[in-house]
Image (cartoon, rainbow, N blue to C red):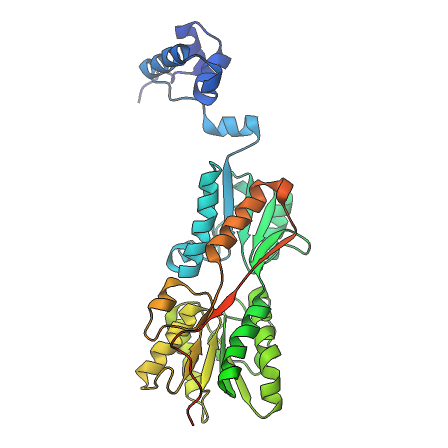
Length: 353
């Protein structure tokens, strides 16, 4: 190890015969110098081995980092493994790129490890959470940085971008009712953290702290209430996770019923594709004996066999609009609700018999 101190900005300034402020401008504000002077400074810095100003120090001086934090309440790999999350994150990244901003990913805090929200070097956060955990709300309040919710508001009255989950679920259920289905299964996301796959005795009235779950259960109920009043049946199963295997596991108790449903509504395409896989494994034709409706319209939905009927929502646009709202506070609105539509494909048909 050398005992020679590393070169500093003042060493470059002395070598060139300029002030330290001029050296700083050569690295941070090149438009303030002539090309000839900037080249002289950079050549001297290279010769001395000076790498440039410390970016952390610059952050403290300017009060800005040029970065956006994306908070999620899932493990980090969720953003790369889940198709809907990938599309949303791509929208976030695209607008960050257009504004010259970096993107800092802030996953959930794992047991025994500190939450990085208090120390993330960002100018603001997009909270891709449903909902944001109370502990993180307090951490964000202490940071006093701008926050935009993505899918759900961080707190009542705070700005967020999302969809009308209740209306979208209502439309999905209406498609099945219009086809004539009267025995319907619903596969919900987990109703609480770390819950197991289970039949839900409370059905569509099941309590849950998740905004999308509650809104979609309410939307299904809005449409299916007349079916229930007329002697139909709705059975709800809460999935353990969000992958295809979780959808297959949640479909099993529905398909084991003495009178199984003729149609299943799933709260995501991945869960719905798991339902199709489980039905196929049992020799139950889709849609001949079982209709399946998903939610999201990820690319895998259209490519599936059969192609999946689903609710289309604009994932990439949601992410993009949330960042726009964060980075352009003059245009910030309290709520931006984006449109959805039911895309009818080959996985649904009238019930047989």
